[in-house]
Image (cartoon, rainbow, N blue to C red; front, side):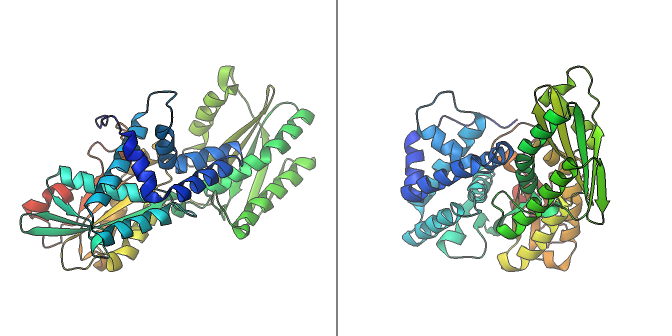
Length: 405
């Protein structure tokens, strides 16, 4: 288990907000509040996605409860950003501010920036001198590690697990929120317990901020489910969709939502998309599966192949530090225990595009927020060394590149 971070300094949080820009910060929080009000499931997903921003803002105000360990980690990294800005040259501070401004607009979040800060902290703790070459020298990579006469480049990047899913969780959350009123109305006319089983061969695309074109897929599926509910039929199918309403058999206390979701997860598997709507004692479950298994680790490999030629110079050993976002605890643990990340990383390292890469590392928000094992990696990140790199056995680089599995 990672150690609990020290108490935070409220002044550092105010300084971080000033660094980002008070006006931009306020506008971002207002936008998060607006998006979180769109529905219970989408709102929860929005708050989780912007957990860093919300943690910093909560700790800046009067505390109604003690800060949690994730909040303290967020506060610590905000303090790291303030301290870094004080050390940088004027050009470096300008570049840092530009990065913050970009991450506080549109689809951005502070996760990728905090991943960069945390990566620097990890490498300093391992004995390296760390320079922020991306800010100071406009380098294509982010960090330059030095140990004695040996140097290594580190490029920090983020990939969303949604890129490996046919059914996007953001789109599913919006669909489930839209269906609530329809399903409650249907349950009042058809008392009982039901499950709508869906197979989506071509998936369901779109995020929590989906543009109109992507939102059309959610709207179309919503309309088809409503039409099914209005008929006497209990199922329909075509090449792009299978829908079927079946009775849902519940035993004992399974009707309680936390217990029900746990039972459904065991029945339908970790990749199923589930939602529960209730009307008094009556229950309607939606359970959807895509036309193929998730390929999150494959999405990581594709991103590695895309960034290696452009982020690393090839003049020094290079480390690709990947942040895998939009995963939950069970999924992140499964990716590691099934060795999916290791398999795809090593497949990439065997490719010619990986010649400048001495190691690939992977982390998630569970490491960033200091979650305990087994949900997070105890060492703070997964590492996969490239044995064919000329510097693979350099003792000075071992703490940063030695494989962790």
